[in-house]
Amino acid sequence: MGAVKRYAALLPAALLPVLAGCTAPLQASGSERAIAMYRESLGPRGALSFRHDESTRRESEGRTSSAPDATPRVLTVDDAIALAKKNSARLSALEAGASTAEAGVAAADRYKNPELRISQIQLDQFVAGEPQIRAAVRFSPDRPGEVDADVAEARAAHAEAQAEARAEAIAIEADVRWLFDDVALIDAEIAAARAVAEARRNLAAQMKTRLAAAEATSIDEAMAELAAVEAESDLSEQEARRREVLGELLDRVGLEPGASVEVVGEPPLAWPPPALPSERVLVEEALRQRPEVAIAAARIDAADARAYAERARRFPWFSFVELGYQFTPGTPATPGTTTGLAWTFQAGVELPIFDTNRAGAAAAGAAKTSSQRALAGEVETVAREVRARLREVEAASALVTAFRSRAFSASAQAGAASKRALEGRNVDVIEALSVDAQRVKVELRLLGLVRRYRTAVSELRRAVGGRLPTAAPRAAK
Image (cartoon, rainbow, N blue to C red; front, top):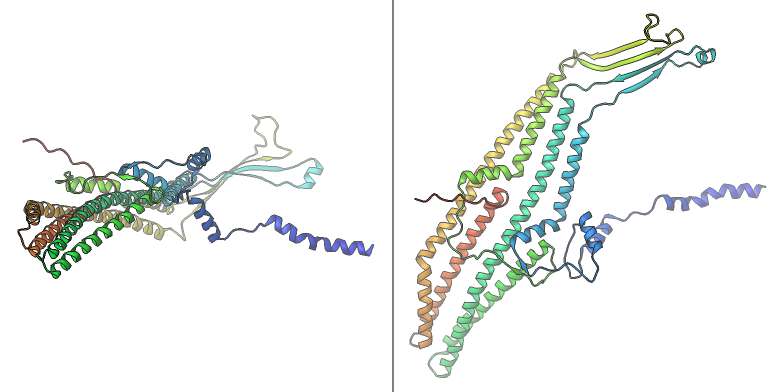
């Protein structure tokens, strides 16, 4: 019998590790979860896709492993923006946060539930057959404006969450558009660098021929070879830069590295560019699109509602209202009699004597004034930023126009003259090399000015908050 008792005492100790293992499973660490998520995001060909919402999961479950997503053969800027937004896990998280904040608006729009009270129940009265029971319903009414203030603050939080998601979408669109512009600019620079490399290589070949015919010196041949090597190195750098930019673009849209995709964008040297809207149109569009303005406006509404609620707390208000009925042996069983009326009513009123909430109302009023001035500050910041970016675009556009009008035709004439002279072999090699180098310098200078203009337009897009509005057509004279 003693042995049985000892085994029974040891049984809980023996079962404790088993029970602990069943009720508290080991959790993976944050790094392990992150690594598992990264491995899951890798596609069969190296594409990264971290966004796994319900629609994406259903689509992936409906596809077979033998039929992966088809890589588009031609990629336009609008398609790339849509794919980049769909592939962004951060944008997905911010949109989920906005949905959570939207649910918080409905959760804030609620009133306190009434309280059912049953009191004065004594056991001796039940035993004697004369119970006395009091049932009542008690309300604690919200002060005027309390619920409205909670809802306004929840709406401000929702607007802020939406604005954060909007800001991320604006950043994604601006980045993708700039990558498209960068690819187009690099393609133009590669074309110019390739032409330079071919010309320098032909010049080096001709110099070798002249050296063999004793028509040139070894110094001339060495200079031509060095110039050709330098031009070919510049071409290789531009091609490597294009691979980097294209790889970043494919990574943003969720395509595999090295995908054979034709990037279709606006030609960088098409001039003049489309006319931009007026400054007023751009500023007003920025005030409609910029998330900072939406956040500041929502905070004004929340501060206004909170200020009204704080002012209402300075006046007396019901702390509770109670309506009850007294069940006693003397209570009449039939309605309409005048004896033994058992309805009861109670109420409590909070009197703002010691705490008049004057400081709270003043603080709420100051917060309202601060939020209004914050909106004015945001309007000023946005307007000045748009004006500054527009001035940069106009200055860059004027530089490109002036440079093209002065140097474009001269560069073409110099290139044709240098080519004819080299083919006729009736000019000094050093002079031909100098003319060709100056012509290339002019072309690269033009591309640099065009890049400056495209960069300024990209910054103007960010300042406006997305796409630039179309300019109004000018009236015919």
